[in-house]
Length: 471
Ligand code: FAD
Image (tube, rainbow, N blue to C red; front, side):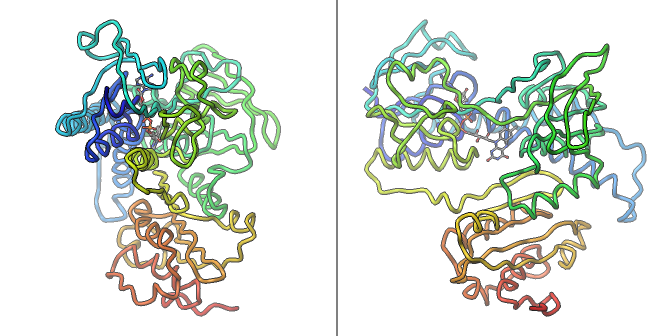
């Protein structure tokens, strides 16, 4: 009998497997596709590989500003795809090697729960010769890390050819001249910026009044302005009613604030959220409870309603991010091993790879208001930061929220390299640092980090490169 069987080899499952081996457990990991899960194969990594292509395209299209003439700029989707595939393969084989080096037994196949100590595996994708028709694995503990998949919408025509989810969009070999995106959330907007830079005419249709509706409202509003400026059309408060095929093109009908819309497109991406991947696991038979959306319910130890069975990552909902899945995987196996670990959910950074990037950690102004927390805000625009000017990337700002005790509760960045800058904000929020205690933390010059420093100083009206506040 193994100490632990993990179902799902995404960033939740494979990291949990490594940590469990470090803690001395015997571990089997079952994966039906490729290790790395959504993140490495269909999510974070492939999109960020394309993001880099898009970034280079944008830089080259502004090259004249830097006195550089670029003639005959061409983009090959096929070559970008090949580069992306190479990166994914490198990372997947790196994870395979790590798991082997740690002595994790990896079984390729579809796992099902037989009872609270037994998992059965039947042939999945990959090398089927490795798996007998059905294999039983006994374990003291089972960890479910089966992740999520794209959610669908009850809209007529979404099964038509040319209507795709994010996984299929990552496989296309030609840039669609017109791309319509249903959903103005993180995934939808990352693709909007990427394909706009590749040359597509992009239209985003969002049902809610605001895009990126979970973000601090000031940040999402600014993003709306930046999207418009780069030529991306956003229809918010707009409900898609149906999609039809009209010869070579698709026709998307929607009802918006100003009446009916008819949007022609060559390709339509549906990015309306993610749903838990639990089909075939046998949850109901075992009595593993799920919520109304199908996410597995867990307690503070990541234990499900069945003793000995745990769940982490996207399949339990909440913050559906790769680093959250990993942290939950680590914490769950540490709890199984008897450690007193916990996750600081109040300090989870979240990055959005749009143009410009967005990165946030902690509370938004709206959250402070809804929780009745009195707060002060400090801000600093990248337009006044020397490094941002040298980069030619002056759009955006850093916004810091501190409570009435001066404790930094939230950091929100929209601007160049926001995803790198948020590291410092994460430490400040996690450690509950006071804005006044931050004074004296020297930031190298010229760096983008100086914008964060000035925003923190601005909480108490002490920013040095801002004119005195009129209070
Ligand atoms: P997954 O990564 O989904 O892994 C689950 C694994 O379980 C899969 O490999 C699956 O094949 C396997 N599995 C499922 N059922 C079974 C079964 N019955 N038997 C055997 N194996 C099974 N997050 C970020 O933090 N940053 C980003 O930039 C980012 N970008 C994203 C872009 C896109 C387009 C998408 C779709 C997601 C993105 N995410 C990003 C989210 C991130 O990918 C997920 O939060 C993360 O992968 C969740 O990890 P997980 O281990 O819970 O599940």
